[in-house]
Image 1 (cartoon, one colour):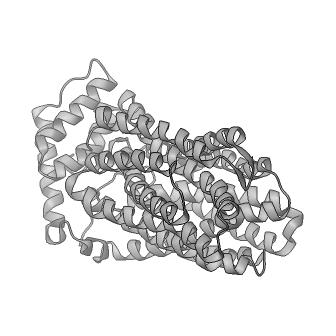
Image 2 (cartoon, rainbow, N blue to C red; image 1 turned 90 degrees about the vertical axis):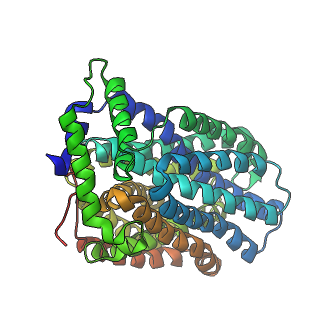
Length: 453
C-alpha cells in the first residue's frame, strides 16, 4: 500500500467532505477574481481609450501588461511554491492583490494603470496555479476532475459580479465609472485574504515530501476529524507507510530535486514541451479574441448587454465539463472542444457579421472547456515535488502568448476586423495536433505514481 498510501487515506479514511468544501469556497475567490478581471478589462480597455485618448501602442502595452504580470507571477509560483509551501505563496499573493485592487481606484494616467495591471497580473499569476494545486492534492482521485471544473463556476460568477457592477456604474461599453467597479472588487479580495490566513491548511502531500512528516500527519488527521466527527486518528502502521512512501519518492527523484531539470528529464520531457506549446497556442487564441471583442461589438453598434450575452456559452460548457472530464477523460474532452473551436473561428472569419454573436458564444463555450480541462491535465501530469514548478512555468508560457497577443492582434484588427479569427483558427489546429499526441491522462488514476527511469 505504501506506493499509493496518500490515495488510500484520502479515499478510504479521510473521504471527501466539509474540509474540501471549505477550502474550495475560500480558494474559489481567486478564480472568482480572475473571471472578474477579464470582464473588467473588456470594459476598462475601450473606456480608457476614449477617456485618456490612448494610441494603439499605449493600448497594446496596457493590454499586454496584465499578462506580463501573470507570466511573472506564474514563474514566481513555480519556483517558490515547491520550496516554501503553497499556503505561504497564497498569503503573500492575497495581501498584495487586495492592496493593488484598492490602489487602482486612484490611478490618474496610463503609466500608473499599466504598472498597477502589471502588479495585479503578478499576484493573480502567483495565486491561480495554487488554487488548482491545493485542491488536487487534498481531493480523492474520483472527485479531482469535478472539483477543479467547479472552480470554473466561480470564474463565471466573477464575470456576473462585474456585469452587475457594470449595469450600475457603466453607461455603455466605452463609458462609465470604472473606479467604482474597482473599489467594489476589493470586497472579494478581502474575503479571500481573511479565509486564506485563518482556514486554509498547507498541503499534507507537500509537508510529508518535504520532511515535515508530523505536520503532514497532523493536517491529515485534522481533515479527517473535520469531515467526520467519528474519525479515528491515523494508526502507527499508516504513519509508517507514509514515511516509507516519502522515502521512496525522494529516492526516485533525489538526483534532480528542486530543479527545473526535473521538467526536462526523460520521463517529463514529452509532457513539458507539449504543455508549453499547447498553453502558448491556446492563450494566444483566447486572449487575441478577448482583446478585440469589445471593439468588434462597439464597431458593430452592439450594446453592453450583448457583450454580456456572449458569456452565455460558458454556462453549458461548465455542465458539459462536469460530466465529461471524469466519464470520457481529460484528453477526449479537449479533443472535442478544440475541434469545435477550430470550426467556429474559421466560420466567423468566413461569414463575418452574420454569425458574430452566436459564433462568439460558441467560442466562449470552447474556451471555457479548454481552460478548465487543461488546468486539470497540467496539474495531474507532474509529481508533487515539482508540481508547482511544472504548472507555474506552463502558465508562464501561456502568459507570454497573452502578452504578445495585443501587439500582434490590434494592428491586424484595425486593418482587417475579421482576419484575427482565421489566424486563431490556425493556432487552434496546431494545438489539436499536439493534444492528439499527448502521452498521459490520469483520469481517475493516482497522483505521484513511480515510473521506471
